[in-house]
Length: 416
Image (tube, rainbow, N blue to C red; front, side, top):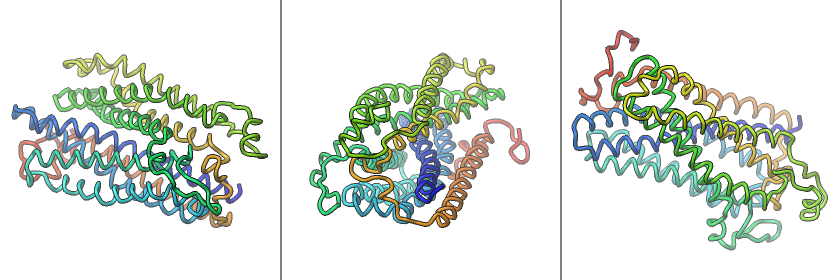
């Protein structure tokens, strides 16, 4: 395997790992917004206490994922400079601005308000605390949007002109309004809702299977199920228009004629990766299967039916990783399908490579992948440890005795 292929492999692996963190972060935020909004607006003390407990419990899972996800994002920034300097040289004047905005939003606004949310329990008014969470959510989704502005331009370059071999921004409005960005943004929002909802659903299903049919897990189950189902509907609503658009600008993703590519861009090998149809089929297959599973499970959202349908719970927690696999497949299809271009029709991937030696790339590939893989395993281990134990204690509100009481009798070490 040559240095270029090693660099591409590293970018694919590290980006896929980071992608998992992003999906869980955005998806869990939607559930948190619902829980805390219900808690803040509820007039019944019992309901308010329950939803605040749910907010803090699922909020801890969100914070774990966010903290470790930040580290994986930093690695992504390094790779552009160390391995893909040609991309910055040719196209940095256009796609660099959205990435800079994303960095400012993610590392300044979002992290600042998240810290205020974490340490603001019982210290700022309830309504103000809720507003802080909404700001966290808005900045998180804006951060994802600006990344997609950059990626959308790489998929469908608009609003620029070439000067001395470099892309120069001439129409920021065209870049902002790029259909490639907006199609992908809606699709990814749906994927995030599906992933986050499925995580909440799967954990709740596990507890219900263990006969913990309490209001805490029944309402978590209902929220996760509805969130995931809404997400799948958003995916379908945005997926088909996006497919039609991509067929028009990148026909090779769908088996287009290579002769047309030669006529447009000159001689070259434009044959798509052999596995491109496979990842597309995997994404669609998981999506269709998931839609059927969630549709059949929807009646369990009513009353206490979920507590009585223990036989159905294993299917729902086993399904948790599959939306993530579908989302990764979709990302691979989007990125691999535009090869050999890194910026479609403007710069080829080989020309963007920094020229690092094969030996250096092996060291980088092994090291970066090991670090990010360790972060991913640690993330899921901590989330599983937290969610499987259930709401045993409240780590953020030491004086909220009622909210920190265990859901059920707890023995030493948290074992029921």
